[in-house]
Image (cartoon, rainbow, N blue to C red):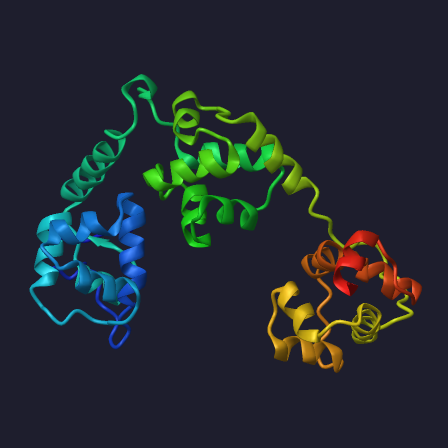
Length: 301
């Protein structure tokens, strides 16, 4: 974030890049993250209709039609929204007002937390999140999916840009990871709210197998031949296969034709789970390697 004086004539004021307005959607998401609030809090404070704000946030409208909205952003949050769109980041023109807004919004959020669970200190996310990541032995994609946040928001957690998440993230963390993130921030260490969920997450993150990083073995069956052999062996409609794999028809046909070779662990895992066949080992051995006979029978029957 940048801080700029209010006076437009100040020579040190950052200049907006010509013809380079950042998308409204990106700037609103950035503002929501920095304030730690949801959309309704912002459009109500600005006196906007929810439908207009929704079109901005969904990326349907790329530039405000009402020029007075810029002044409303300045009065409500102390930011120059027009200059922010030009710079591609939130530009603060009244730091005290902006920081007071952040504190006010956070206070409103924590009113919903039971008084008995209230904490006097808050440890920043850039300290707590890495500890959670290490405890679960999980990577970023795993945690961003569980917490329901974007990769950019998660990165802001790690670099300290966002010190506290939205209430929604606290709820997701407890429901998906079994961790009370709010109390964890208060204690400065991980507080487990549900041991069963927590242990399940540890097992899930640690059992996601990856192809060996050692020297690549010699495949008797190339990728496309293995797919064709498995399809013939199962004797089912190809549509059933690519639907269960979660890919499109064109992609699957490209794989079978040898135009694309995509050998990822998630594809191998889906073959094991959905069809009971070890795709990776089948390519090495040059024959169908069955890992779950019951799954094979279900597919063939």
